[in-house]
Length: 215
Image (cartoon, rainbow, N blue to C red; front, side, top):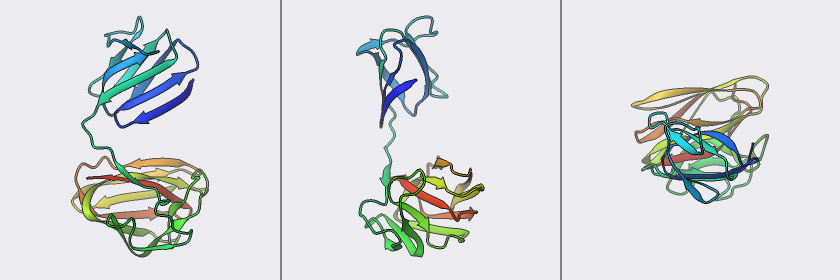
């Protein structure tokens, strides 16, 4: 059982309930050091004793620790961490239609397709919703081409919703969000683009947050 955990751009720090545990993580960086109780443990071919293994292809990290419940992993990914739009800063009242740029110089939301939503379901902060809950298509544009990483979505309905995300010249990707599910959608795109399109089915109760992008 993990009792606490903290994530950084190239790090994970966590504690388990017991001193002795074998933990499996998938990370997006290569670990440079792994410490248990402040002491460095070594990379091994097996886990017959305290240490860790790491698969460079799948990036699966397996740690066996026996002397402490506190584990710290530090690494180097070479990736630029994403920026996030949380729809709380700058703050607009719930129901505000997004027209033009928000935040300034980052995204053009077009003409009243989107609006600020209240905290709802598994989202405890302000959100993004469709201005017309029955809309099947929506879009936004980056002022400067960026890599769109994705966003979080919650489906408050009692039926599945589907979202197809596409951009000119980039492979489209589809997601199904189950009833009452909070899900992090990630495009895994590597190319920058300006226009992002959404094709939505049963999206009446969808709420979005934490829109992620990077240069």
